[in-house]
Image (cartoon, rainbow, N blue to C red; front, side, top):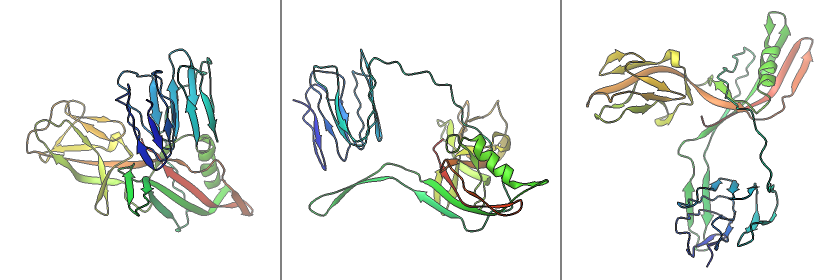
Amino acid sequence: MANRITQLTSEVLAAGIPAARISTLAAEVLADDNPAAALSQLLAEILADDDPRIQASQFSVEILYEFVHARVSQVAGEILVDDDPHAHVSQIVFEILYDYPLPPFAEFTMSNLIFPTLPGLQWNIVKSPQFHTTIVKHTSGRETRVSNTAYPLWKWEMSYELLRETQGFAELQALCGFFLARTGSFDTFLFADPAESNTVSGYDLGVGDGFTTEYPLTKTYGGFIEPVGYVDAGSLQVFVGGVQVYSPTTWNLITPNTLSFPAPPAKGSVVSASYTWYYRVRFGEDVQDYNNFMYQLWELKKLTLEMVKP
C-alpha cells in the first residue's frame, strides 16, 4: 500500500517507509516501490533513514533522484511517482528540471553593515511581532494548533518626513544609497530599533553546571526572553562568578549570538555578559518611493524592515 495524507484528515498506511513523518494541511503522498518520495503539500516534513536524497521544507519541496534531479516548488499540486522515474505534476506554480545540472551560484555572505541613523525619522513607527501557527479546525468545533516558531519575527513600518540632499546633509543619499547597495530586499543588514535599547549590561546567562559550555546571548522584552539577532564581538564582556574573563583563552563568540567556553564554567558560578546587539533584517520591499516636496528636500512615507533568522 501507499502512504496517503488527505486534507484535514491524516491517514498513514505504512508499507516499506516506516521512517516517513508528515505534518500537513493539504497533502497527498504516493510512494510504493520507488524509494524516492513524491509529495504535494502546504506544510510537510519527511524523514527517511535509508534514503538521504529526500529533502522537504516548508512551502517548498526538493527531491533528488538517483538518476535525475527533479526540483518542484508549488502551492498546490499532485505528484505521482511509482515505477516510472518521471513525475506527473498538476499544480498552480511549479518548476521541474530533469537531467539538467543547476547553474553554479556565487557564494553569498550576509552583510554586517548597520542601518543608518538619520534625523528625519518620524515618530510613527509600527512594530509587529509575528508568529506562524498552523490551525486545523475540526467538524466538532475543536481545533488542532501547531506552533511553528518559538520566537517572533519582528516587522517595522517607518516613515521619514525630511531627507535633505544638500551638501553636508546628504540624508537622502545615505538612505537611498544604502537601499541600492542592498539590492532592495536581497541583502540583509543590522538594525538597532530606536524604540528599544540594544545594549545589555551584566545580563545573567545562566549558572554553571559543570557540563554546559555554550550559552545563547539573549534579551528580555516585557519578561519574554529571546535570542538576539547579532552580537557586536568588540562590545562583548564576559563574567564568571562576578570576575571578568577574557577571550580567546577563556571564551569565544560563535557568530551570531552564542557564547562558547572551551571548558565548562565551574558548577554554581553565575555566567553573565555585557554586549551590544542588533536585529538582522532586510528591506520588506524591492521599491522605495521618495517624494521631492521642495527643492533638495525629500520624504519617504513608508519604509518596511523585516527580521530574518540569523
